[in-house]
Image (cartoon, rainbow, N blue to C red; front, side, top):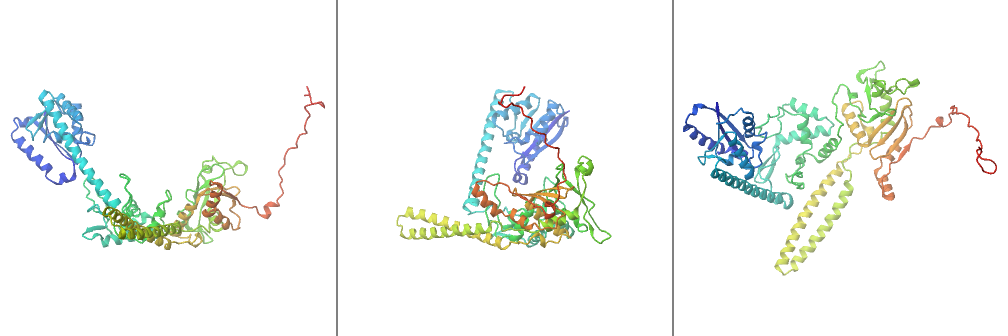
Length: 576
């Protein structure tokens, strides 16, 4: 049975919501009423809504017309069928050659193409039809290209006004927690409270999944105003929705930089921040540690590994796992920290124990206590003012220079009589004023950033709670790159993120080496050395041996050295 295919298409959402589809439907209804032998056709309706014919999306695998072409090729749509469209421009706006080839392919398959607007057949079988198809293709392509150029020019002008001149906005486009008014952007109170809650809980070291669970438990509505047409709307908060908010610069009033167009960020575009700056900076710091995902289990704090993904076996370089950590108390009343064991030892591939046996495990309580108390105790917690002092000094200097230039330019305007030169000076004065305003805003941010600093050390954290261990995990990961442990000798080599190495730390020792760790992590000291020698070289800090280990007798035995045998005679000639 032959098929009557009714094909309609619009390119944009505005056309979907407008009268474009209805106009095409009215054309087709009139055509259908006057069609002879109507009952001899199987009617199918194909609609490509929001798909561009200029870029050929409608004839690709994504488009309805593309599926029609495949069915024609497979024989599912037989010769003698009719493809009805409003005009050739609905069918294609490709280059005239490609558009004509598409029409010719359909004609060769025995498909009749009928244009409702022109009330004629679109064909390449006759010279006249071919010429008209080519001319329509050129006209449709040129029309779309002209619209594209005009839209592109307008977008570039708006982008220039928004991101460079800062004299305009993107209209009604704003985050979901703001609304557009005559006076700019105004926050929506209930949404702002939700955002502040999220940042506050993250500042208090809660994981993103637990934040989402709390919001869902309290029936807090998801902050969104998106029109979900082609995708099912999310049912509630999730870890990804919380993370998207925590990383969204718009909460501090900044329009983010555009990676597609290369436009720079615009501070203050959306007005004042809706969250405290220290909460924002802390959230960015916590999000910067990839792979260090927080584990939330209030019943078992030891499920949070302080050295997650950091510890390896010195013998085989396999990762090491913690077995047996649980909340239940032992007979002595202390919790089970578990034991540290090499993954290679578990499958008997790491056999470095006594007598070639499996590499032994090491009590995790010993490892945690020794490293956190005798070595890592001085590691600092959140320090979100890193570089703030230098930034403040530089900004103040730049601000002073700009104010001096502003005063000189203002004086020059007063004495200048030439109107052209006077206008040029006025333009320069406006630019200087904008620069000064921007520098003052940046200076205020850096000063608030410096005030938000917390310099407490790891020693101040409660490692018996989930929150304390999560923060300790982030603090350790910030400075430590790798911990290589020999469970046979209980010695550890610690590689820092700055490249320095602390070598031979005895986990069973009670000596305090926090001073060495402070020196090894002193970035200013190592930057000074790098400036002197011209490059950064890692420094190895060997742990000094104790008095007991230095006086131990060396009971190792070595074979006797064989005496030298002469290979020349007294005259220096080789002995045969």
